Image (cartoon, rainbow, N blue to C red; front, side):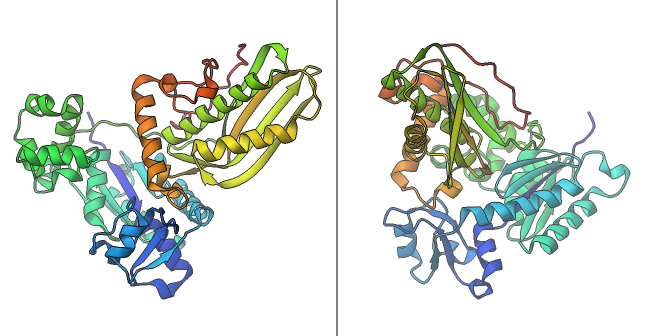
Amino acid sequence: MKNKSILHLDLDAFFVSVERKQNSELNGKPLIVGGMGDRGVVAACSYETRKFGVHSGMAMKVARQLCPQATVIKGNASTYTQHSKEVTEIIKSQVPSFEKASVDEFYADLSGMDKFFGINQFASELRQTIIKESGLPISFGLSQNKVVSKIATGEAKPNAEIVIPHGNEKIFLAPLSVNKIPMVGNKTFQKLLSLGVREIKTIQEMPVEMLESVLGKAGRTIWKRANGLDDTPIIPYHERKSISTERTFGRDTIDMVRLHATLVAMAESLAYQLRRGNKLTSVVSVKIRYSDYQTHSKQVKISYTSADHILIPKVEMLFKQLYSRRLLIRLIGVKFSGFVGGNYQINLFDDSEEMLNLYNSIDKIKERFGEHSVMRAVTMGTKTIGRMGNPFNGEPPIVLAHRKQ
C-alpha cells in the first residue's frame, strides 16, 4: 500500500488569538475566555495562564483563583465562527480533500501531491498563507495518519510545525506521556499510571492482550495508536446547512398533550444529533400543516447552543405563536440551522459545569444503549422519533420520506 500523507492543522488558543487580533493590548498578557457567572466555565485560555494550571473546561471560579491577574472575557461565538470560516475557505482553495474536525481544527489528505511539489514544503506554505491572510497563529503535524499527525501538532504548539517521516512514528511517540494519545482521558491515564505505564514506549513494548485485559476493547485501539498505527479515513468536508424532523399524523389531531410530547421529542432528538456531530445551532424553526394543507412556519435566532434545556423552550414558544387557527393539525416539524462546529467548546460561554456534565453523561448512555435509552417523561410514547446515523459525517443529507405515526 502506498504511504499516505495526512496533515493536521490546529489554530493555537483559537478564541484567545481572535480576541488578541481585535485588541492588540491583550498580547502577551494572561487571558481567559469563557462564562463570566459564578458557575461559568473556561472556554479557552492563553499560554501565559497555563503555567498557573488553568485549562479549558475548568470552572471559571477556580481559574480566577489560580491566575488572579488574568483578563477574563465573555467571548463571542459568532465572531469566532466568522474567523473559522475564513480559515476554512483558505484551506478549501488550496487542498483537494480536507476534513473540518471542529471550529479550530482540520485534517487534509496530501497523499500523492509529491508528484507535483514537495509535500512538506506545500504544508509549510499553506500554514504561512493562513497566518498571513487570517492573522491567526496555527500549528501543524504531518505524518502518515491522523493520530500521529494530531499528536505531532500538540508537540509543535505554539505556532510551529513538525513533520514525522514515514517509518519514524514509533520513535517519535516513544518518549511522550501516554496521556498524549487521543482517547486517553483522565481515568484511563490514572489506570495506566497505577500499572507503572507513564511513557508511550512502555505500551509499545507490551503485548496488546495485556492492555486489552486492563482496558477492554479500548485497550487495543490505544495500543495501536501508541505504535503509530491508525487507518481512520479523512471525512471530506461537506457543509450541512440544517437538520430537521417532521411527523405526519395518521389522523389529523388537536390533542395538545400529544402534539407537545412530539415537539419535545423532536427537539431532544435533534439536539442529541447536534452534540454527536460536534455542532451548535443558532436558528430554530417550527412548522405546522393544518388539515386543509395550509402550511405555516416560524423561526427564531438564538445564541449558539446544542443544549436541550435551551432549545426545547424555544420550540414550545414558536409552536404557541404559530398555532392560531384552532384547526386540526396534519403535520408538525422542527428544524435547526445556522451551524458552527465546536461541540461544547462554545457552549462553555453560557453553561455551568453541572449542565455540561449532565449532557456528557446522558449522551454516553445514548451512545451505548441507543437514543431512546434516556428521554424526558413527557416524550414517552413518541418512540419513532430519532435516528441512529450522524447527520454531520460529511455525507450529503438523506431526504427522509414522511413517516406515518
